[in-house]
Amino acid sequence: MGEAGSKPLDDVVKGPTQSGRETDSSSASAGIDLEKESGEGIGRTPTGTSDEENAGEERPPLSHQRTHEDGGNGNGNGMLSRVASRVITKVSTKSSWNPGPPPDGGLQAWVAVACTHLVIMNTWGIINSFGLFQTHYTTTLGRSPSDISWIGSLQIFLLFFVGALTGRLTDAGYFRHIFLVGVAFQILGIFAASAATQYWQLVLAQGICMGLGNGCLFCPCVSTLSTYFSRRRALAIALGACGSATGGLVFPGMVRQLLPAQGFPAAMRAVGYVQLATFGVALVGLKPRIPPRRSGPWVEWRAFRDVEYSLYAAGSFSFFLGLYFAFYYIASFSRDIIGMDYTSSLNMLLVINGVGIPGRVIPNHLADRYGTINMLIPATGAAAICVFSWMAVKSTPALYVWCCFYGITAGSIQSLFPAGLSSLTTDLRKAGVRMGMIFTIVSFATLAGAPIAGAIITASGGRYYGAQAFAGAALMLGMVLMATARVVKVKRLTREADMAGSWWRVKV
Image (cartoon, rainbow, N blue to C red; front, top):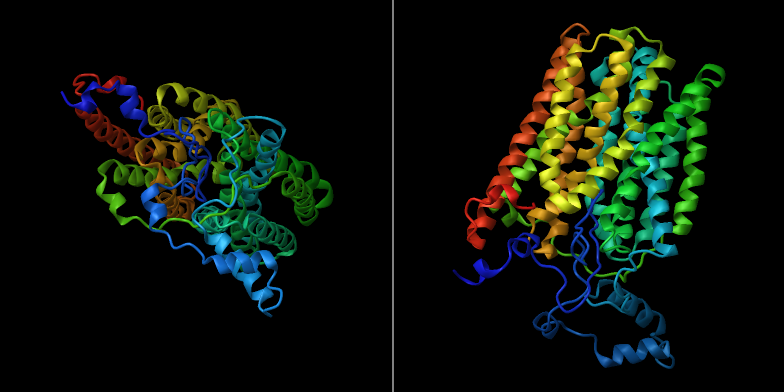
């Protein structure tokens, strides 16, 4: 038995961790949870570089350094030298200062958690609250459910698609700039939506404008947060991710109270004012901790040669097709099938978002012990069973119970999905670009999933059975593909560790 066979299996499974130095960078395209064991972030290019890499770097001439220090006095090129020096600093692969290891706690770190919570409240919280807009727009605009779903789907699509791009700018040191652009898009979109009276206006304001804001805010903020933690990173990211549940409670609750007395435009403006205030707090409190650096390649096509990665990407695409169907249509189902009024139907949205808090925190805690994919597979299967069982719900009490179960399982999937990739990627230097590729893939699933379900409802004469079957089947297929990815990964690990027959005990 070779060297790999003499190592404990846990060492083989964990892959590379800290070796001689602490790396704490994070990916631009990091998701809701990140690598928990390693000192590196999930995907920024590691701060440290090897001696071989450094030997091949072309360093700025000494004269440039002196010119920068002198301010260019006496040669008339001071301004040009200062600008060039800043550019060199921005794109340097080596840090201009050493931030040290992640503090893994302390005032500034927990302030970053709170600020990320506020940002996610205003991004994913609005997305998870789209059920209230789905019902209202379908009624007032006279459009089909599928048409209205495109508004919410555009928000998620742009969050993932644009987020994979803006994260790279965060790596280059432009966090503040991206954050301000995102806030501007988000606030402009919500106030424009409050004044919109036609479908195309809502598509532009709430779908595209707010979607661009989501993409500029979510990934950069989560990746910045991850640089403050190493050992407790899973807990920190999970607490930040709970902002989606907070927003899913706060915003529907506000609309529920303000709509009867003030009307929908005033309720939307109130939501905008809350967003503006909380974004201001987040801008002040969330500060980048590590120096800027040049990002790695945008696409790594060789990643698809890894069977487990390709299966994971396909599984993610599949379950995202059906994951948000309930968030969009639970209020409409409550009115159309159960017979609730609009205000009461929003209670279902409050429940399904509220129970997402334990659904995000507890599975992440267990994933540290048992493995992320080992937790993601049963969570996806449970969500599929919940959606299939939705067909049997015929009363208000039964719907409340169903919302509790689905909210927990859906929250688990949302928080575990990005972390699962880190357990499949042994070379963490490639984790960032691979996460960005996954985000791009699933963005198209989130764009198409809810409109497809809405089209099925319309074609079925307002009945939900077909759409429920579609969403449940998509989730179930995603579970099967995830399980297959785990089997491929575990077989390779057990073969390398010469531990045949122990595949079911492997932490992945």
